[in-house]
Image: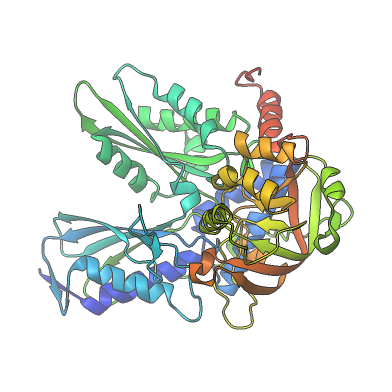
Length: 508
């Protein structure tokens, strides 16, 4: 029997799904993260998970984005052969993009426009997060099955691919590769692995596998029933034994699940792709059957654990950014928790590149960075009575190549971001007796509650990548790299890998 799918059905369904996944974590993720929180023995990792869980429930209650990076939209459509499309003024992809446009521009919960066109040259923001990446297949049936995800840059950018020889060990490659991904993919999350096909098919398999429910806890409880399930458990246990932990701080849980999808391949080949889902796992599934738009049922707030993170005022040191000195920064110790107060500047990739170009030309900068802290963030636009939308940190390693310039030429004395710093960034920090502070990725709405005022003060045309000045009160951060160049993202995982004791700690 032929089913008619109207243009409005697809558009409204896509828009509603994108709104839904912006503020509701999948319940399977919450259940597994709650278990990880209960079992976690690392104080730093447990605190990070507490912030993520607290942020998640706040977002569910306030219907605001889980993460400031509301992602690039991925859509998988399985179109039944007995489906007829009616009232479509353009292509199916056009309809999907109209849904994206509608979903991201919802005035009640405006999402961040992150997509830039002309990706190599001009990189100009499209302003409405279109276009989506759309995959379609035609299958038997009379429905349209839709899987939709929003992939943040932090996790997507850590995707890996290798063309193995048939006899090469998949486990060895994964265990060698995961530590090279750092913490910019924002663990604890999950890894999708695609094996087989061709290079591009393996990547597609990995991406699709991430749409599956997290069920590692249940799988371990009942035991594996085939070789693929055995491999999933082995990889999950061995990756967690690396001790990377939540946010790369060292701990018991790095991944909540491993998903694997396979496809036949050439006899001489074994293509393998690996893509992470971060702590802001966002995906949904719905079916259009001709009865109208599909709307997802909101989960019960009772599903979230009773975790109410709050700053530890006894353990944390209050810092006044308005009177901050180099001497004070040099005195901060690795792992120390700080509560930042006062005025702080922001700046991401595009702002740093423009600063670089202006300094090279001898042009004055729009703001004075002397004795200031910069926060690597691209916030969501505010709605209602907000001063700013969710404003969590972005991956700091992308700014490593600019760190020497910023510390040497602008008077900057410190930085706040997500995850670890690379060798170039650490060397510059050590040379200039600066420090790098880490905020928790996956806690964007929670972090934004520390911001009392937000004003664009430079590069207005860059949208979310403009330079803001935030006035903050008790913004929680951890000293991740101190003035001597000691990094908790190096020491923490080694410590916990040794404590777990299943994988030898590399010396040197």
